[in-house]
Image (cartoon, rainbow, N blue to C red; front, side, top):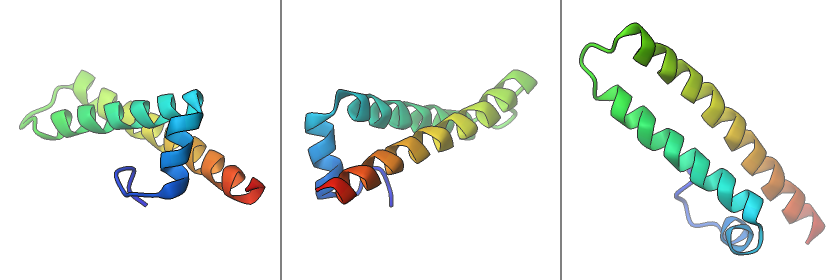
Length: 76
């Protein structure tokens, strides 16, 4: 599922859970920066390292988001 997809559980958590809201914002920020880096024709070593690091961070945040959503779904 894409973070921009309309999902009632996601929307509810964004309204009710500040930690979840921060994670979604962080995920969007990582995605935005990765798009900027992807536009570079000849990224330098530092930019390539940043891209790799951001991809890992984005995936970790996504895993946290889905874990919270799953826990919320099972508890409601």
